Image (cartoon, rainbow, N blue to C red; front, side, top):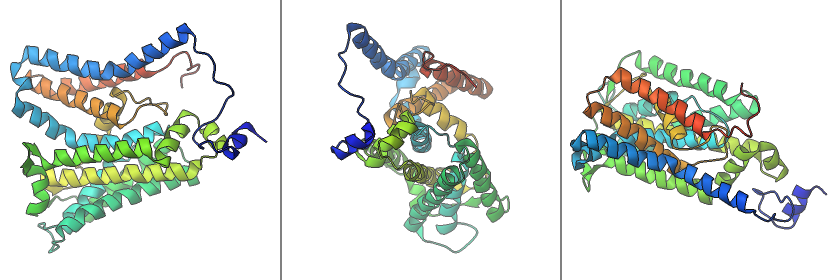
Length: 348
């Protein structure tokens, strides 16, 4: 009987593979583990250092109102980046973020009070928008797993499908969201924070519980760490992959709801630029593009780094074009620091 099957028969969890007796940890290995621990803390330390530097250059940075602005600007990117995190931990990539957001905002705008039809479904709109995002995620997963299309190509196609669908339905126009209840998500505050910020915090909590305490969450890490070993351990890889794509799509749909509420409108280009920001936040936060490492708490730090950097450059009067260049440099540095070059023999 193969070793992995023997482990399953003895009652070990399917997310682990026993490789024999636990080796003794040498002092050099212990030091290396401590080093990895500090590397995990690097994004948080970078966030603290960046905040202190900006405050030194402009004391208004740490004012309460400005911190609230940062939290508000980070709400939608956080929700989108959470979905992207799951896919990257899985060892794949998802380029359909903007398409999912466009569809989510479109469904929300069309079902609540607006200026193009008589619908007034209010709180039925957001759940259906999240459901629409889940359907798009499911399509991504089925194409990727069933047709064996690389994830970046499958999701690139659904990105354009989502944006194209929104363009066809709206005819290139913009639909205004006039429902006061939906708009209150962005305009009403609780404990001085907009409701959208609390929604994003709730989404973060749910995502963290999902990745840490569910079978699919554990198997997601197993697949990202080594799909062949996960298969030997009894993980149903195709089903887990599709499930993770569906869950990621739900977060993109939720991002569409928050975008429609914040901007008070929906159009096909609503999500423009969101893909790059989401992937940047995930990578800058310390989630490895190779899969199996990182998580949504890392992504929270990454989103805050990107938001703080953008806010700080505005306070310092730096050109928006230079802000984009700074984000590009940031993601290159983050990827370069996250790669384990000892294990990477070939770069394609």
